Image (cartoon, rainbow over all chains, first blue to last red; front, side, top):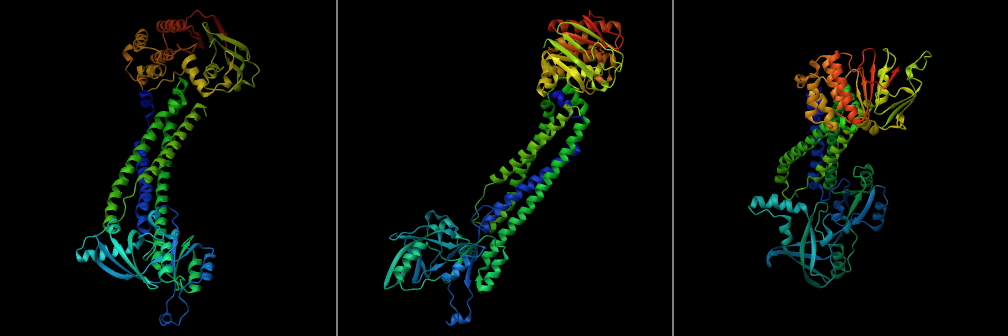
Amino acid sequence: MKLVWKLLRRHISLPQLAGFFLANLLGMLIVLLSLQFYRDVKPIFSEEDGFIRPDYLILCKRISALNTIGLGSVSTFSQKEMNDLKAQPFAKNVGAFTASQYKVACSMGINGVAQFGTEMFFESVPDAFVDVDLSKWHFNEGDDVVPIILPRTYLAIYNFGFAQSQNLPKISEGVVGMVEMTIMMRGNGLNEYIKGRVIGFSTRLNTILVPESFIRWSNARYAPEADTEPSRIILEVKNPADDAIVNYINEKGYEMEDDKLDAGRMTFFLRLVSGIVMLVGLLISMLSFYILMLSIYLLVEKNTEKMRTLLLIGYSPARVALPYQLLTIGMNATVLLLAIGGLCLLRSLYMQQLWSVFPQMQDGSILPAVLLGIVLFAIVSLANALVIRRRINIIWNNK
Amino acid sequence: MNAITLDNTLPQVFLQRTDIKSDIWRRQVTIERGKTYLIEASSGIGKSSLCSFIIGYRRDFDGRILFDDKDSHELKTADWTLLRQRHISLLFQELRLFPELTALENVEIKNSLTHFKTSKEIEAWFEALGIADKMQSPVRLMSFGQQQRVAMIRALVQPFDFLLADEPISHLDEANSQTMADIMTKEARRQGAGIIITSIGKHMTLPYDKTFSL
């Protein structure tokens, strides 16, 4: 093997191999980094992971001055309007926000010592629209604790707006879950208390959310007479970039909560940009593969006679191909390791920046990017090995 | 392998020719293990082609070549590799040494594949053929006669049933060609192998069982 290598390493062009090596490294690094960056940044826009995140819009009716003085058209959605919306081709699912129809007051404290209290309201949406872990998200009549979901922006406002200026400690999502709330509900001649616990924060739903079963039970108990037509609805769409959505909403005179669509747009652009960057990386990888193949072709061409003699004195084609196969696989493996190393380094740089802006961000795994790297390595190495073997077979067949 | 049979064999380039008078082409010839053959030919009559056909380097011939009962056309890549490693050794007319390797490395590149001879045995051959002092020299700096002897040693570091030597002594003097003949015969006897020598004039002095005129 040593002697065979001594023979076949002649005519190896270092500049060509270095060119391949750098180009392949660059391509691989760009591909891995684009995937990793996409995965790291995406949770900032959405709690859910994966490429096919459904997109949600929240709709309400336009409030005019006439509504304020009670003369305008109704500001709630009728069942007919909801069915019409659901029948649109762009709509995937429609859910109503149901609001509490009675008075709600809440006081918060730690260890039973009330810290502050406020009047407030509850809303609910069907469970399918809730973007928080649903394992604690249930309420049955008779339970003495009701789970609550708050908008993530509340926490951000507290942490960055309030706590920072007042020298108060910043709090994490976990700490909020430990705070006990006492909720007072009044209506229909009743005045009762229940405990509340924050189980999560929603990016999608900008309201104080309780389970639908709780709203149904409490509305029936404290406000049996009230009308419960929803004033806001949540719409899951197939493709947020669809023009038909905006046209329909304008035509019906509905309004859209813009930031939700912005988040959708941001995710869309993030996906688009990551996709383009990844494509560029793949293109560079493919070009580097092409450089390597050209280099190997030249090498085999220049060493054809030697390889033919090796075959004639009893070396098998597999053994003659092996040195070049090991050379390319070795280089590909080095490229993979360096690319993963580079990925970790660059990631630690941008993650520091992201953490300083979004401290609640979870540290994701680099496993998918590493797996992608291994898959690329395997494909490229296999293709290299096959092409080399095919060249040797051509020599064997004396063509 | 006990016999190589040439059954009505003819190089395809000769298909149009009608004036071929040969003991081998277009005839049924069996070459047996353990015997010694001389094939005499003038140049351009297909002597090296015959060697290429037998070793599987070229397949452009009519008729059949049989190894025992097996048709050479049916051999797969792995069969040919095994045949070249274990059954037929060819001493190429054009030698096919690797110019960038030393004389010893040229032999070792084959021996590392077959693990057939010890370095002591190889050194003894270099000694006997008078090129022991050239063992570490690059083969490209040696004369053609010296290279012929290196190629001979390389042809011997493998097990074989037949040794095919294509003009082995074209550039050797009488004394060296006799030494080479002795070494070759001794190794072939030891292995019970057949020897086939081709020549276009000067040929090794050996007790030939049969002489063919190609």
